[in-house]
Image (cartoon, rainbow, N blue to C red):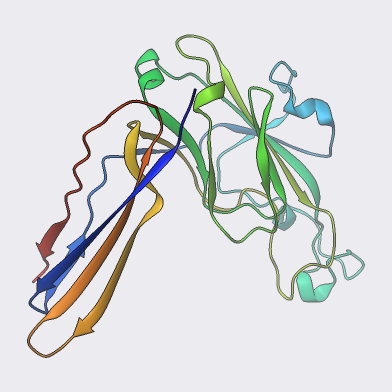
Length: 232
């Protein structure tokens, strides 16, 4: 049984002003921007990992399909939204992941998709992210193939409901994508929160709250280390 257990550690540090607080993480985060396939249009078969996408366009991210269209005041986005077309587009990317990664947790992380994106991995539905200005990620570990077997990510992007913005928004995976690998015990996504509840001319109090995610069952020894770096 897969378990996600969260631990929180609070550390209060008294430091001289002029120092900064940094929490070091051991996540492996690599760019996943290259070699995506793209098509305009919509069909549910596009999420099938066995679908033949060889006729799709090859491109690198970030990508905005609206800016590739023609300006017209008659486009549903209206001049206030950029006067460019919206619509629905799909992205797909195949990749291989080594056997060693099977002992870790793997996530697909999107910095921004406009808008209403839905994501599949190897035909398994991961979820929907409404709107399009926030980053998000999914844990793809349970659905991965390891070794020489391909994995396929499919992303449906729906910017057909127009107008939906007071300015030009673009359409598609318009920010970077990352493949993130962590140990079974790691700092959680957005898991570090730093505040300075007290600052005086002589000292500062820095409070660090760190959330640790434990992804598998069984006992574990956890040590949280916070480092202070002098940037002077």
